[in-house]
Length: 159
View 1 (cartoon, rainbow, N blue to C red):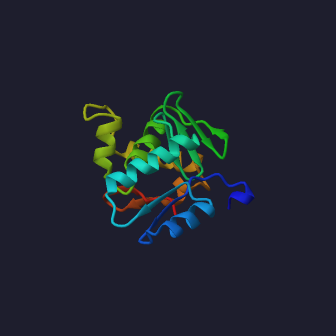
View 2 (view 1 turned 90 degrees about the vertical axis):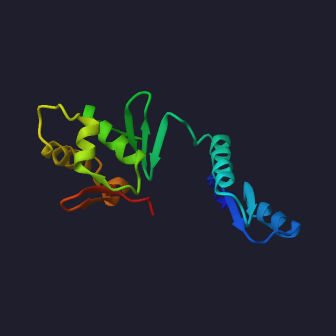
């Protein structure tokens, strides 16, 4: 993997805890090694540390598959190509990315992005979801955003 120039951080999680096993894991290119049992909080901390060291973690950036969203500049890139999402389109994408694997009812999306005192109707949610899907056609987002009929939407994890 490392010989091919792949720099993705690698964390091995295993029940094998001997020093030889750990050494072998590191020889194969692992950046960290975690043995079972472990605390989920520890796993989260180790992943964040690996991402920080690799330069792939930034609190102002959301990443989903081939999409990178810069929260500071409101820029969206797909495979380093800028994609223009305006106002509510950008907010909608961010809301989905921050709520992966959560069923988001249309009413909740509407209240969050437009507010209950808005002079528009809830159908605006469908319009903006359609706009974002079109602009991100062919991406992991477009493939994994599912419409739940009469309910709302859910953005599944990237496979």
